[in-house]
Length: 394
Image (cartoon, helix red, strand yellow):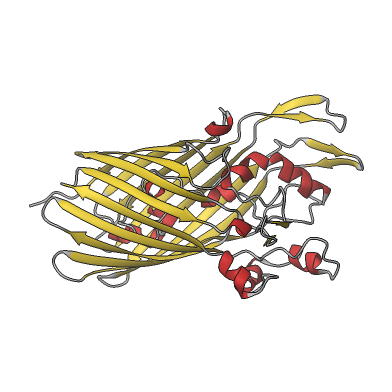
């Protein structure tokens, strides 16, 4: 448990970024007397919207129009992407509202169309937590560590029919929070190391037309299903990866040759077990810590101590709207909601994009709507640049 606590102190900034709040104030009561039982995972950055497209629409993405960043939201969408090949990079400065200047998130993605029915893609997520002073048990500075996390994935997407596609991804994950430093506490020393894991994603995507002007899409995506993270050889409390289920849909109306509007909605659910109540002495914590990945994923639908009402609180909702003019300019807006007892992230988003030839530029801005005046999410921006080669029109 000492290693786990130390790891969580080191990842405080990352957890603040994700607003998971699992390491600080876990299992507190809200002002209304409701129990706040946050779900804890390792590497929460894997669920943070990395691109400037979906993040401008309240973090919807499972059934949005296929694009370069489909690997994060629903890998099956790559089978329906219009281009032959493309690559893109998104940059997000983190926690600027808290005057943290050296935390950044980068996301690189690319794809190549193999044939009319299949596409291959790859993505790289890199998160740097800046510099952190490593001290001994008395608070004396020993050295400076440079914690960072990254994930690399490869994807294959295949059209099963003219309207339905299946996607599969494999992912290598590394979380290096201590650079191998020896952690000291009141009971001794602990040798640490970076945590590695392998994970898989699987997605389904369906799109069809209603008539010449209207179309719709549906999507389902399971991501980050993989082995737990461990930061030392004697770490008995390993961290679950943020395994996740996302389902949603999109409705698009082409008003005329120049104007097009899309409405989107996502429902999000962590496939991670809910922690027992604080102070539980029935052995629930031992069961929780020893639970396997697949067992945890299945039990996550009916394990909340508060019953079905708490299970419903664990659902996250995202809604977004996108307006295109002449396939050149796009405006976006959206909203993200998470229950206060499960993290409390609630924010509006806006964004825009420009298309010129093969080059695309996108920008998104996040506006917290909670009463927390010093929200670390305030003023978060994302900037994306992509290049995409589309087939020649005849």
